[in-house]
Image 1: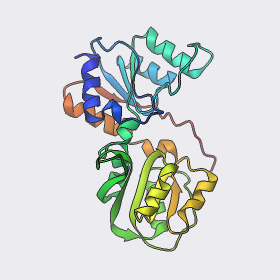
Image 2 (image 1 turned 90 degrees about the vertical axis):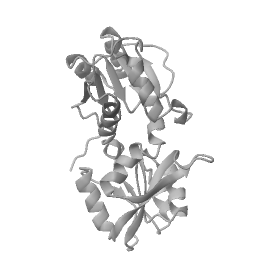
Image 3 (image 1 turned 180 degrees about the horizontal axis):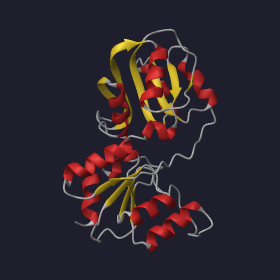
Length: 261
């Protein structure tokens, strides 16, 4: 088994050309012709994750978020990115990112959120031209309408969220829910147009909370929290193709945001 075999399968599931223009999914570092000893899947690739991979004898890290988003001018131990890259290269560990291309398939990151909410009748919220199963966000229906406060409570419990930022409640029951893992404020208008009662995402800025127009509740559940189940998704995607191969989930919580409650 070579590293390239794992990558080929991942790109069959979520092709690289599905990623957004700003993204940097794909091989970040490493030699894909090396034999793969084991895979460590994670949401973020940090110096601590590379150490974990080395200790667990994994020479491939599959991360949702790319370690490098923009071109870098130097690799130096004075910053987190430099230290992480240097550690990976020294240990001969390859780093592969599968980011917005995994977001943009209907069975991807957003499906994991929808699964935990039990959404049915799912469809892409903002499809790409002439493609109904590829695009940004997801929208679907709850099996039974619930009060807004009940959905907020369910989100706290199911996603283990200490606090949820949200726009004013409308007082209406929630039956249609739109969502986007990670930063999804650009989809608020699409959610409104498709009749969503509730929009779930993260990284919502102050003024964006006004865009619900008192017709739809906008809930910010946190970036890490919204994508935390991506690790399980990646684990299953690889294991289904290679059932007898060593695929490990990282045991490190990489969320950089803390809450004082």
